[in-house]
Each structure stands twice: as structure tokens, then as C-alpha cells.
Amino acid sequence: MRMIARELSGERGGEPVFSGISFTLADGEGLLVTGPNGSGKSTLLRIVAGLLPSSGGTMEIADADARWPDIASASHYLGHQNALKPALSVRENLGFWRDYMGEPHLAVTEALEMVGLEEIGHLPLGYLSTGQKRRIAIARLLVSYRPVWLLDEPTAGLDRASEKQFADLMRTHLEDGGMILAATHLPLGLEWTHELRMGA
Ligand SMILES: Nc1ncnc2c1ncn2[C@@H]1O[C@H](COP(=O)(O)OP(=O)(O)OP(=O)(O)O)[C@@H](O)[C@H]1O
Image (cartoon, rainbow, N blue to C red; front, side):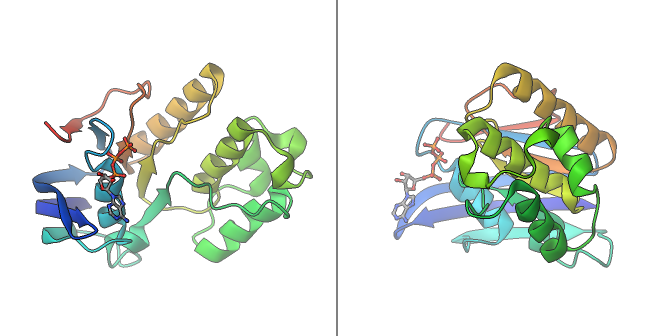
């Protein structure tokens, strides 16, 4: 499978934010998106995810499995917010996403083990610390399968050990033939096949 962006441009509130962005990602490749505050990293990820229209250019998927007719259906999107409900337990949150997204991958217990939080699956999500909530949001990527991970500041709030654990999860996803687009200010502990500096 390939993901191809051609001359993409984006705007917010009617004002241009970026233009002329092109890249191609193939199976097992990752694109690191960096750049100063306001340069449009989140805007680009939201356009790729299909959450915002682009103001120009095209974004397409090629040679994809029939399960993924477009990039939105092929993607997990992890934004600044965790998309978890505070009143539900950790397990209920992950169980919801596993059922809702389909294409079940790891069991909830296995995903909790991967992020080192199997002991607190019974707690309401709202009781968790900021970093623990982020780790549950990361476990959400593991309970259902999607080949493309779109990650916006994925390690915000994580301690060093959790950053390393997450780098290992990303590396495994790439080795298994997945793709990652990650916007970040922090080193993510991976060798990236492609890098895009916004606002340059
Ligand atoms: N709804 C909106 N209406 C108008 N302008 C917006 C809107 N949302 C974002 N912007 C502007 O679009 C620009 C790009 O924002 P974006 O969040 O994509 O940047 P970013 O590179 O991800 O920044 P950061 O590093 O701070 O996360 C910024 O100048 C921002 O103020």
C-alpha cells in the first residue's frame, strides 16, 4: 500500500497555513513532521485523516487492501485529546473502541500489558494521571488494527520509560508493514524514513 500527497495546501479560518506539501509513504515507512508552533502540523494531520478538507492538492491511497477504500478507513488518529470517557473504566474504554473500530487486534488485557497498565484496568479513566491517560490512548491503537497511525504529539505527558515503550510499539508497527505519520516537537526515539519540516 502507498499513501500519496500531491501539492497539498491547507487553510484555517480562511487563512492559508501551508502549501505545496508532497510525500509518498510505502509499507513500513514513517514520516516525521516537525516545525514551529502554528506551522500547520496538526492541520496537515487532520487533512490526511479526512477531518478537514484541504484547500488544494490531493491525498490518495494506492494498492490498498479492499478493507481500506480510503485513508480515513485505513487510519488510527491520535490527536491532542485522548478520545476516552472519564466515567467508564479503562477496560470499558478500550473495549468500546475495539468493538466500534472493528478489525480486532490485541485483546484489551494484552494491550494494557503493552503499555504497562494491566493493574489499573478496573479504575475509572478519570482517576488516571495525565501520562497514564495518554498510555491508554496509545493502547487504543493496539486493540483494533489499522495500517496507518496518524499521531499528533503522541508522547505529550509521557515519562522517559513510557516514551521508550511507545518507540518500541511504533517500531514494531513499522516492522509489521504499517505506516506512521507523526507530528512532534520531541524526539520520538525512532529512525524515520522521511522527514518533513513545516514552516521552513
Ligand atoms: N479554527 C481555526 N480558525 C482559525 N485559525 C486556526 C484554527 N485552528 C488553527 N488555526 C491556526 O492555524 C495555524 C496552524 O495551526 P496548527 O495547530 O496546525 O499548528 P501546529 O504546527 O500543529 O502547532 P503546535 O506546534 O503549536 O501544535 C495556527 O496559526 C493556528 O492559529
